[in-house]
Amino acid sequence: MALHFERMGFDPNFVDYRSCLQLQQEVHDQIVGGERGNTVMLLEHNPVYTAGRRTEQHEYPRDGTEVVPIGRGGKLTYHGPGMLIGYPIMRLPIPLDVVKVVRVLEEIIIAVVKDFGVEATTVEGRSGAWVPADDRGPDRKISAIGLQVSKRVTMHGFALNCSNDLLPFGNFIPCGITDAGVTSISKETGNQINPADVVERMEQELAARESDLCAPFEPDSPATPLTLDSLVS
Image (cartoon, rainbow, N blue to C red):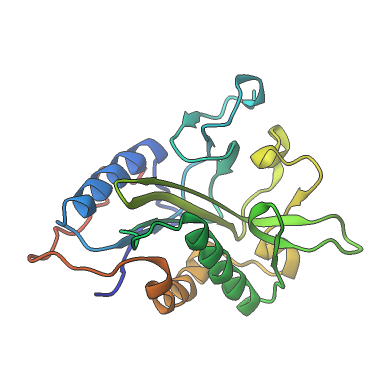
């Protein structure tokens, strides 16, 4: 009944966003149909901006990087090398409580980054995990969360800044928030911490909170393993 973890590609095998989005949809449909158990895809993407439903055209970046409109809530965000991307594709319990799932994901991420020397927290009215304001600057977002739920099953998920270049965030207003910054585990600690260093700890914490995240189930027959062949650039 455990969550199934799929490590889809890490440096130097970055995963194309559009191909991964198509695979997410396929996995989503399989879980809706009872053909696959709850699955978490973990990976690093090539550079890409994704635009949630509330993104306005004038907010798009103009640096030439691809922008992909998607179905999650929120505004614009960035994915790229050095970020641990997690797509928990899970069947939710009834009654649906998406806010609870987001809160649990925040708690998971906060626990993980603490193990790497970063004290993060939540900010009222804002999703994700944050490093509180201090003498180094204002509140700084270290992880973004954005979910979409269809037919009781989630898509999209979270992005945790590990060792990524923060300059692309200067090309737009991350998640539409103007009075806060962006940071990473590596920037906060002064040590190079890559997604591959964090992924096992993330899996452990997600597995430990499975009962808070989803309704466990397994199909009658094992699902076909997910393939990297069409995804890795």
